[in-house]
Image (cartoon, rainbow, N blue to C red; front, side, top):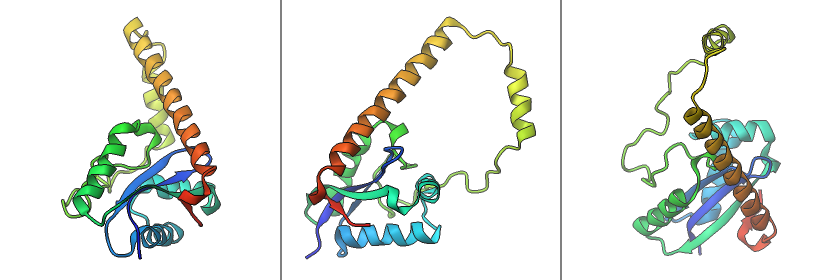
Length: 173
């Protein structure tokens, strides 16, 4: 019998994670197989997760069960939202931090037709900002943001390390 609930897919190198939930008949194993199939074929809807998979390889990822719950869509989505609210966005691969399922019609890729900037465009922006004096408030805000991001990465690293040491909660790749 399939188990249902919330799960995460974790990159061992960056400690970033994709959080999801399953309430359908296939359960965790079916959901993990679905993610693996899409990632292996290069067609996963989550671009940041796909990019990391392509960069670090399949062996750098593992699937971990967070909560085993009844096969109830609302309960699974509520628990998924709990994890979104608890995590710092910088440690998540998730593009949309709202546990909506597919039924709400929210597009997960709002910049589908965006074109990456050329090196010439980047250099032009860089040259216009060169020598611009930053206010003490701006500098303090940037430092605080960097401190928070570092703390979030460290917390994610520790979470991933503890998850990796619990073999009963991970599924094989």
